[in-house]
Structure formats: structure tokens, C-alpha cells
View 1 (tube, one colour):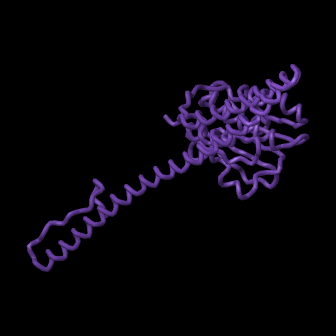
View 2: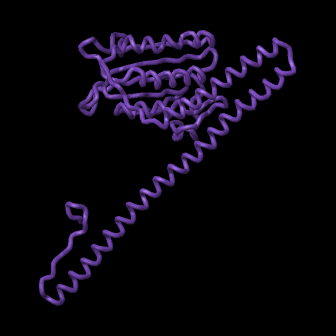
View 3: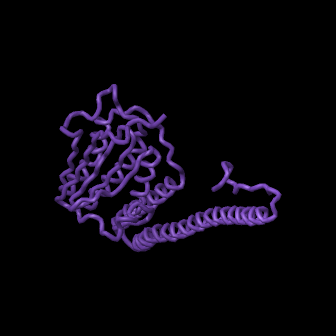
Length: 279
């Protein structure tokens, strides 16, 4: 084994030639093991760097692709507008503005990923907050005839009384939930249903806030399940693919986690964070 400082132990000679030869061999072996361990640590660091560069390369290629598409659409519209009447020009400007928004959303998402999420935790009236988050998506749900339901605590009672409000960053968590709700509304399809449920759970000696967003869409293909939270993995042609990466990052920054639940139909995403951060 290693000494407490992480170095291999070095045995002193005892003055017996035969024993000292064995001690010599042992010390040489210990030194070699120590060298190998240092090399392994260096290799691990280099591998982590190589993986990061590989990921950055993939990210850069994807960003270039994501920006080139809307740019192509804008160029085409602008060229047509130059040759057209004022109605076509108005139409072109609207399309161009929409594409600029799309690029802007891409870059905001990317910047959000490059900056570590640092939550500003505060006591939150979780019931009112969740109702607000869901209400912000009602109009979009109605336009697609999607039944958007919000299920408070287990039996419909409040999740928390004022004295026991949970502590988290409501803005960051809202970003994560907005991503999950937009994702669900996109996949539920016209006439489908999206449900947000919340519960307070106790395990491992702590209380947790668990929020689940489910939809009645086609679900996530088996081959995408493992990679769905990686940046730029998206099942949609128009997707930025940053949404779920941000969700996982926000959950992790709160000391929690986010995952895709195994359900027989549709998709069900879960965010779970500690009710109170560990002090």
C-alpha cells in the first residue's frame, strides 16, 4: 500500500545481506509503482484535455452549421425582397428577424453553457412559483390544443407552508423548467397532453424537491436515451439541442440531478434538488 502522503513506503536496510537484497528489490519495485502512478495521472489529465478539445471541435462544427442555415434563409429572403414589391419586403423582414432571433437563442444557450451556473439561492413560495411557470406556457398549449395540467403535491394540497419553503435559485430553475416544458409541448403533438407534477420526498436523511414534466408524445428513441442530455443532441430538425444540457447543469449546480424516467408511453423528465442546500 501507499504511505499516508501517497508515496510508496521505503524500507531501510537491516544489515543482513540476503534480506537487504530483498529490501532492495522491494524498494525498486515501490519506486517503479510510484512512477507508473504518476504517469497514469498525467495520462488521465491529457486524456481529459483531449476529450475537451474533441468536444469543443464538435461544438464549433455544430455552431457553424446552426448559424449557416438561418443565414442562408436570410440571404435568400433578402435577395427576393430586393426584386419584389413592398409587401414581399415586409414579409422578408419578418422572416429575417425570426432567423436572427434563432441565431441569438443559439448563442445565448452556448454562452450559458460556457459559464458555470452559480445559483443565488433564496426561499421560494414553491406552489405559487410553479403555477406561474406553467401559466407562462398556457397560451402556446392552447394554440396547439394541448392539455397542459399542473398537479401540485401528492393529494393536491400545498407542497409547502411559508415556514418550510424550499431554498433554490428561482431564475435558474425556471430556465431549466421552461426548457423541459417547451420540449414537452413540442413533442406532445397537437391534441396531446403535458403534465407537470411536483412532490417533496425524503430519502438518504434529506428532503428533496422533485419536479416531473411528462408528455404524451412518441417518447425518446432507445439509441438517444443515453446521450439526450449532451449539448447538441436533438431529435428535431429545428432544435438547438442545448435545452437538456442546460437542465442537467442547473440541477447539478443545485446539488441535484436531472434524468429521463423510464415510462411505458411518452416521455417523462425529472429534476430533483435538495429542499435545503447542505450548509
